[in-house]
Structures are given as structure tokens and as C-alpha cells.
Image (cartoon, rainbow, N blue to C red; front, side, top):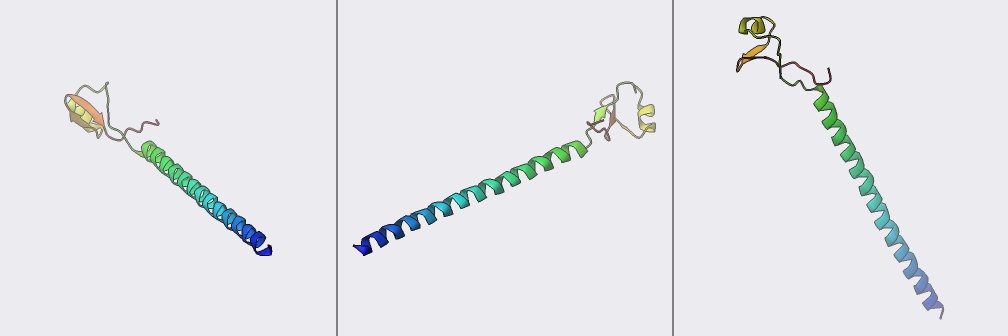
Length: 87
């Protein structure tokens, strides 16, 4: 009779250890993926803020004035390639 209760207790402790292992693995995966997703989002946001985006300068209508200021002339528009969208 004593063997049965020992086996039952052993079975319960093995099941509890298995549950604990699965929960620990799940939460570790959750935390790790959260940090990864957060770092990707931060990286994406910071690179988009730092990148320059070309924009046309509407008040410059002549090619020579555009090129004097260090900009490029394309399609009858003056383009500034150093424009920062956070400006």
C-alpha cells in the first residue's frame, strides 16, 4: 500500500515539474520575442527619422539657381536630397 501512494506522489511531482518546464519555456519565448520585436521597431523608427528624403523646392524655378545652391535639377524641378522629414 505504501508503494501506491509513493508512486502517486512521484507521478504528481513529475507532472508538476513538466508543467513548470513548459510554462518557463513559454514565458521565456514570450519575453525574448517581445524584446526582439521592440528592438526591430526602435531600429525601424530611428532609421526612418535619420534618413533624408528628396523633396522638390517649389520657389526655385531656374536650373542655374538650383545648381548654385547644391541641389539637382530634374524634370524641370529643383530637388533637395538632404531634406529631413522631421524638420
